[in-house]
Image (cartoon, rainbow, N blue to C red; front, top):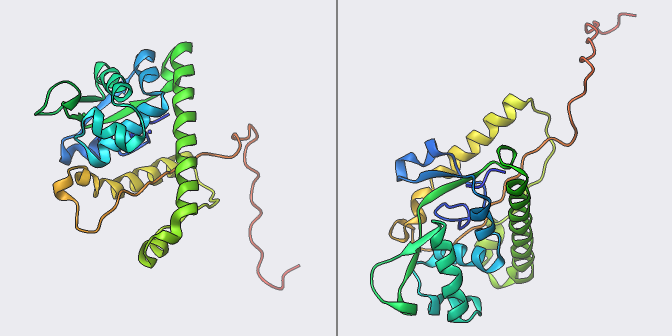
Length: 231
C-alpha cells in the first residue's frame, strides 16, 4: 500500500495504495511505514518497480529468470534485487546460490506519508508517485493495444470507471475504507496456491481527491421549499 502504492503495493510488495492493516490482518501482512528517503529512492526506479511487480505475480524467481522476462541482464537484475533486499522489500527464498538464488517479495503493506517527511522525503515521495502513475499509464496503453488478443469474457469484464460525486471529507474517507474492505477479500491470493483456476493478475488503480479546495465562505442558507402553485 502506498498512501501518498509493491506488486508495489506490497499486496505483497506492490506500489499502489492497497489496503489497510486492519483489512489485511487476517492474511498476516504487516504494515510498514517508510520514513527514510533512501528507502523511497531505492524503489523509485523503473527496473525495481518492474521486479517487484514480477515477483508479486510469479515469484520466487532468480535474477536470471527475472532478467529473461524483463529483457534485462541477469547481472543488472541481481544488482537491483540486492538493493531492494537492503531496504527490506525483497528477500532470499530457499534454494540456489549466486545468481541462481531465488528471490521473493516481503509480504507487507507499505505506507508512505510524504506530508510527515522532510523536504528530501517529500521529493522522493513525489518521484515515486510519478513513476507509479507513469507505469500505470503504460500498462493501460498496453492493455488497449492488446485487448483484442484476450478472450471475449476478459474484454467484457475489464473496464474503466470515472465519475464525479459530491462528498464530505468524512464520506470520502468511509468510501475509501469500504473499497479497501472489498479488495481485502482477495488479498490472500498473493499466495499462488490460493488463486483459482483461470485467474489473471489484474491492475486496479483508485484515486479519490477533491477537485477544488473548500470555500472559506459559510454555505448559503437554503430557502424553504414552496408548495406547488404558491406565489
